[in-house]
Amino acid sequence: MGCTPVSFEELRDLEEFYHMLHPRPVAVVITRCPNGRVNAMPASWVTPVSDEPPVVGVAIGSQAYTQECLECCGEATLNIPGPEHADLVYALGTVSGRDVDKVREFGLRLVGGRRVSVPAWQDAIGVIEGRVRQVVGVGEVKFFLLDVVAAYARRGLMGRWGWDTSRTSPLMHGWGRAFYLVGRRVFAKKR
Image (cartoon, rainbow, N blue to C red; front, side):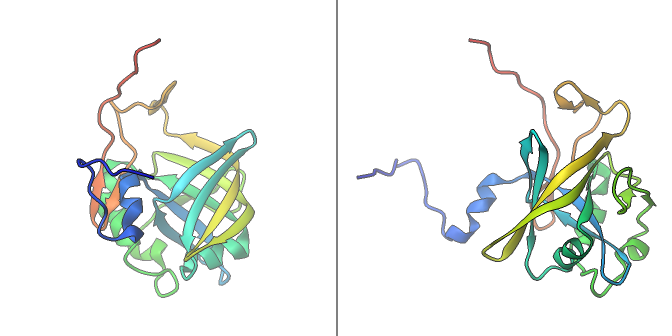
């Protein structure tokens, strides 16, 4: 026996429920592929799963080349883009690494990973390195659980409460070409 408040409107397509959870931080997932080439794919379905032990989850389409690469090499870097990277992040998501060498095509500057064999993106504002712990198939995606083995950010951009939004913002993805930046910080009142 439920009641629907008059002020709420049902979504036209239930498959678009996830739009209610956006905008979300986007990460450029860098992997090494079976052919030895490095691939980069933007993903916004990325979430912390546990902090003890540190685990991050990323959902990747079952047909995406990145999931093949991640299953093959078992390691990835999750590279956090800044506000200036919206055009690049969008472009990275419009082609498949199966067909295009994205590192060369988009001029990604890479540096060696600190604790994984996969490189990191030099221009990111932050990097999380991980090794595959478990893969769970859910509908049209594979949800990769990665043990976090290293995490680092550009000097001066992170503080006690996370990103210093007076200095930068992680790029947030809404849908398609729509990106957002983090607004102001608001603290709740103590009880």
